[in-house]
Image (tube, rainbow, N blue to C red; front, side):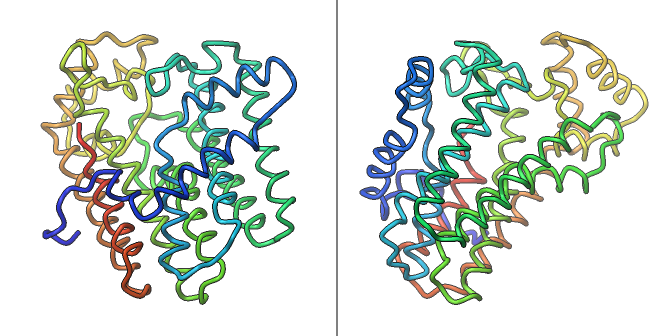
Length: 329
């Protein structure tokens, strides 16, 4: 990353497409509307859970930066968020998570069965909307992306040996599970652009997505919970192996590795055990290594923007990199 770039807020990033994002929220409401009472109740809760619209923001900025004039861009941006919401609903059910963005998850508020069905409903509504647009290209991109994301989920489930999970496998996981949708969003935004710009924006989204996920994994080790003032360690409590731990394990001695093994074997690791592993990961250089990887990927993402002509939207895409890797704890 260029050292001159200051921390960017999401509001800064979204400013060039603020009006379109308001219409995206309305499109989401239209697309997922359902007459069936339970579906309507779940949809109402989903709309309250709606996040920061980061992925639709990237799609709309890519569209603007590539000189697009697609009247259906807002609808396509809503489809991006719909696919993201579907994966969150399924992820929460798979992980048995009780909270998402400070609100009860669908599986906690209703049931795991309803969460699975509603995730499928959201995917199907996205497909219906894409078919309605009668354009094969965005359908082709998002079909590939959803398949990659599903494979990413499978990769996470097959991570059996927690103490010898290779970094290359982690890269494949975050590339499929997180980065593929950001890449697809940027690519769909640039479908009307010359091929070189479309491919550059797809690569931009992929590298940004990987940096974003590594930064997110780092927050689990560094961001303080409001109540305790200590890192949440939620990934460790759920026995998830992310880059800080992968990097640290190679530098740990037998005693520290034994502590990690103890945590992974505990059905419900204690806060003390989690805190102990976090401290050993920090001491072994795992956090520093993950930060370096995130910054390397961020620099690569920034380089891809050189394929675009100067514009306010291109500047906002550059700011999105800073936002992704430097979110506050």
